Amino acid sequence: MISPDGIPGARLDLPIQFEAMDTPQAAVAVSDVAARKISELVAANEEEQALRIAVRGGGCSGFQYALALDKPKSDDHVFEHNGVSVVVDQVSMQFVFGSEVDFVDGLQGAGFTVNNPNVVAACGCGSSFQVREDQAEQAAATA
Image (cartoon, rainbow, N blue to C red; front, side):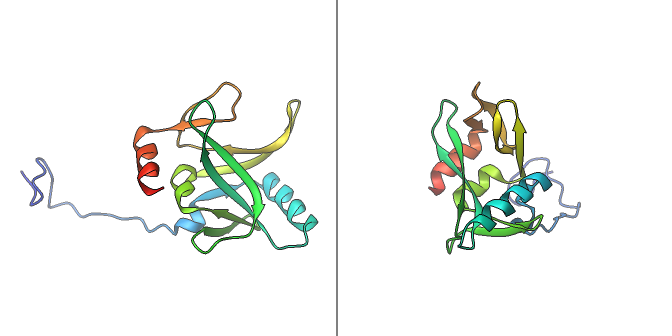
C-alpha cells in the first residue's frame, strides 16, 4: 500500500493518535531539593527572578549548561514546577526538554545538575555534553 504522500507501507486505515502536551508544564522538572535551593536563592535577592536554564556552545563535547537567576524575556518559555519559576529560551528548549534539575551536595562540592535524557555523550569532567546529531543540526538552523 502507498499513501497519498507516496510513503510505501503507510496504513491509512489506522487512526492517528496525538497526546496533548502543554510544553511549558512538561518541559523541565525540578526536584524537591533543587526547588528548596532555588527558593532560598530567589528570596536572597531583592528582585523577582526565576531559574534560567540555557544551553551554550562550548566545552570538549560541544554544549554546556548555563544556569542563573534571571528575569524572563518576551520570547522565553516560562513555567512553574515544585513552586519555583523556570525560564528556558526557545533554542535551549529543544536540548533540555524532558530534563530534571537537581541540587547535589557531596564530596566534590555542591551545585545544580541537569539530568538530561537527550544527552548521548559527555566529557569526563561532566561540564559539557553532546546530543543526537539531528538535534544539533536543528539547533543550528534555528539559531
